[in-house]
Length: 445
Ligand code: ADP
Image (spheres, protein in one colour):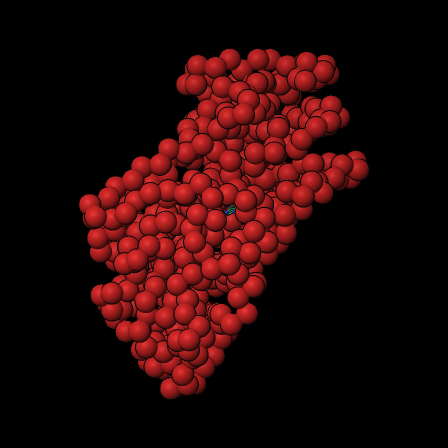
């Protein structure tokens, strides 16, 4: 990763450099999104159901009890702290568990309970008397496969006979060795290898096939073809389900190629809005001046947590260092970190170990941190050519606006160009951004 030049100008944030967000892969992003949510997102979603098969019994349940799960599975679900099914689970589960098995394409944003839904379906269709893989789940990466496997192991806590095996990098097996685990969770390449080249299990005996994170899958080189090759070897009677966090044309084309006669569930995400956000700006003379404003604001931050967005990594690490030196507990999340380090930082922040998270755009999109009550734009979001990036602005500070959740956004402006950007954003959203005196930050609360 190239470093930005070390000369700084007051308006360096407008230099239009390549941002970290472009360096994070779809798979990494998805993993981060999974990790950042400790509980289910409590948004109200709008569920759209398309029934391709008019005979498909489509009903929803309000309780896990109503699903007639095996008692030990129900116990596992409760042990995970799940009291009632989420929106997508409500509708997906009865359909996934009914006989004859139904195929499904389900789309809803990360954190809405998809994994838990298909894992439950996988476990409830596992027959321990069949000592060969008959339930297979495809994940796009090693890490995502492990995440799913961990959910499955937790949920199967009271089903000691169910055997789950990973087919991921690092797992080796010799040609012809017959796998006797019931469930395989792995990446397409490895599963294809085990199923075809090494003949360690019989793809024609698979009864349940899950393709998770289809959007990430098709974004990964080679995965789409491998998935299709696996799919071709499955029997017609196999129950197939595909899950995706996004719903665009490419994903749907792929989904419909893989899943015959599906029930399609789409959970539309609530629009983010600025309605509950108090927006302010502070006029600053320099980077140092911006820092002083933040320090003042940080001082009055009594409840909740804050995220500070910088345009470049250099500014972000400078700010983190400066604030730490003055004894503030801040965390820095930036693009050059390994995925494990990022997860660690996000987890600590989520647990409240740090009140402030400083970041570049790595986290701006797709990840909601509902507990964050204040967002500071140390640099205003701009695109490559230095123009206001309203979409990113909305992603950074917008909330879904339910439950009267409110928040504060502070924009630090350090010159005529960033003032212009601010005015553009204000006009765009038609919501006032009020001037704030950094020496008198009591007004914020
Ligand atoms: P997705 O696969 O859509 O990203 P997950 O299945 O990983 O969503 O669920 C997101 C989070 O919500 C996880 O931490 C999971 O343990 C939790 N969760 C899932 N279903 C429920 C439920 N019915 N009740 C409470 N929490 C749940």
